[in-house]
Image (cartoon, rainbow, N blue to C red; front, side, top):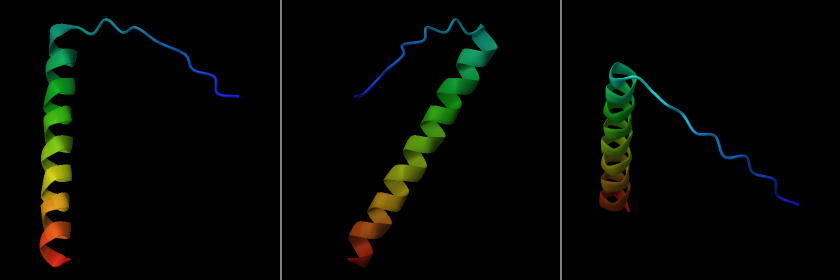
Length: 41
């Protein structure tokens, strides 16, 4: 059985900016690692 909970957050503008920044950094790191993996294979 899989249980899920949906949570709605209401960040302030500065928190939202920090979340977007972190999201972009994670995306860039993932894409870099994926590129390295493809190149090394």
